[in-house]
Length: 392
Image (tube, rainbow, N blue to C red; front, side, top):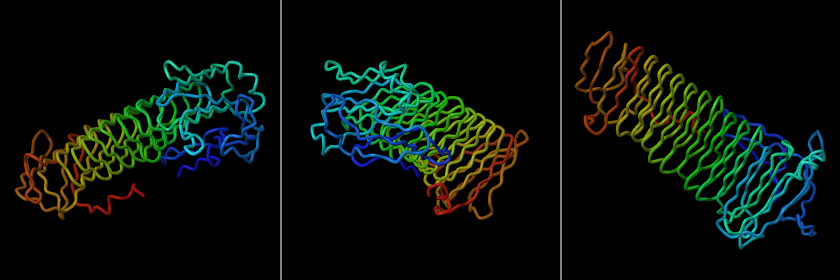
């Protein structure tokens, strides 16, 4: 599980490099040492929670420069950086008025000369904090403590990584090139994440209307998404989510697999070359793949439509499900344990079509259609307990 090595309170993120295990929705900021952090104004006040760390092997890291900006509530952070950036909320006990943005840069001594090109400023009229640099050392890290409710517009270049933790906002936009994006317990009316080659990791619960687009071999791993609308796409990378609670979701991948745990709502899944696996679907589900296989457990349903143009389809249901069936493929296998009434079998175009009812299911309201014109459709019973394999 993700184990960020933070100091207590507002201790800075001691960030040297990022190690990510994409197979699990987890990330870990590997941290270096830092000295006690002081306000950029030159005052002697120590920042709450600032404590020395233990340095790993390699060049010593220290605080290079800091800013304490007085801001108005409900503002925005705009950042354009080639290095690591972490954003977390202010300590409400230390700053009850939520009227500060604290910015700190840490890194090795050799990175200090590059700070001249780092611009940190606050515009009162637009209520925007801007952190911009093209020349800062890519191995440096910028840490921002912002009011809990603050909009974000963040872009990193190169291998710069971004982490956002426990922030609430109307709009959150994050863009990376090769760096990893980590979002942990974020609430946003509109959340947009784009990466050209990095990983996207969502930890805890992410709330809001969500758009995630990952290019090249980028992977997307998610603990839990909850919102009205979710749109996620990958190209050649895995798309994996444990829980989706949405009104409407569209998930797609060109060549990567789509692996989902428990999904609720109206869900559409598409993959051209990859496989699609759903451990538990409750609601309306439409899933299709061109060359991959489909493996779906339907726990509760409205309408389910599954199609693999060149692969096979496996459908699993609880024995008590009320549903109308229409299964078609080059071959169709219905397990003998499944009790189907009014079963009919039709042969057409080098394939077979089987229709029937389970537990007097409605032909109009609740149905499962599975189609594999070049492969096999398999249909069998499975208990709810057996569907919990990915929800550990």
